Image (cartoon, rainbow, N blue to C red; front, side, top):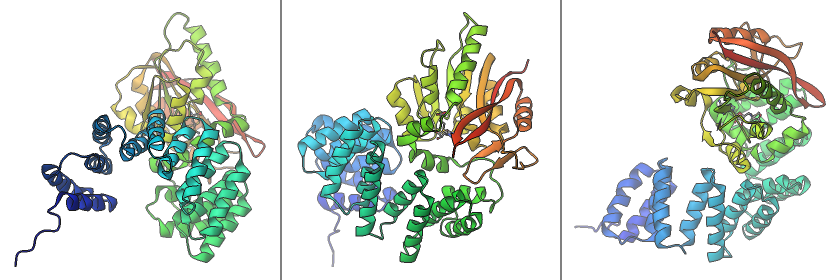
Length: 479
Ligand SMILES: C[S@@+](CC[C@H](N)C(=O)[O-])C[C@H]1O[C@@H](n2cnc3c(N)ncnc32)[C@H](O)[C@@H]1O
């Protein structure tokens, strides 16, 4: 007997496409969507699916043009507006995201999803009180949504209400003890506020309740290590490694604890996870630590300008530009165009909000430099090389990109006096950053074809009341 195929009607086909995208099976969804487009009238729902599919396949440009075209035809469709708001926010265009999310809220003022998107975009734009209002309303409408609660806590903390932020996370944990991401957010919160004992207690509660993952044990190890209990930390890292042997965050912390052979650099996925989670409070935190590197770099750049009066200094490349603090320090100097590169989209969004860089690029610096053909007048790297062990690969990529007479200015952390470095002159420390000896900086520079213009000791910032010793280096192409 012949049975009609259940996916023969357009609406059944579209339902199936949606289910496949939700399940992450974009390869299977593609042909079905193409078939649906043959038989169905174009509708906003169809465009929405096409945009979601394109995003699922990593084709953000196609997703964006699907949404742009669909919104031009149906500007009052809340779903399309929300989808474009989320896409733009992810791509660092917080202004466009805020405009679309605001439209979606106007279309449906009761929609918590639209308010949540508006709140997140407001936060990226630095409108913290407004972000708190939007996210409070969204979270009140969906009190059991842990992601919303976490977003609200982040906004409250950024708005200066750390105690309120912690209360929001704790209330969520009391109501839903099994919400793992919420627990990890609360542990991370405690670590950031140096309440390591509470962080360990929260992790322990999770372990007893059986809701754990690699991240929870990684954070627990971090808190234990911060209290100097390295033996307990090693046990936690071992648990983390069992649960997530491929997790780049865990692998790096495990390597830092000395349980894995030292990796020559911090993995980009680890850096993205750390700095995306740090971006909202990076500037305030660094200022509170008495961060000195951008100011010290400014003095060196001024020296270059004095020595080379009349000749141009830029274009300037800022490697690992983060939230743009170096751009701020140099903003009134006649140095020409600045380009910033960073692996963290959220750090870049904060840099973009300052409006000081001509171009901001989201990439790993090694990958990006390999394809670059610019001749830079100056290359800067403030507190970025502490995420590389061997400095050789980066220096070898920078050297051909630097114009004759140009300077490469960077900082590294120096090993504390009692720390032995490897034979190569660097070491991965327990908190995941590398330290470098003066000898390693000098020899890697010479091997890459630089001469050392200056290499001197400099306090980079203060941690736990003590100065963090660094080396500030100025290299120029060897004659
Ligand atoms: C400590 S922050 C310093 C930010 C900025 N240079 C400053 O001085 O304020 C380090 C920054 O370098 C970025 N970073 C580290 N390794 C990187 C890599 N391999 N490629 C791109 N960015 C990197 C991080 O994402 C982070 O934003």
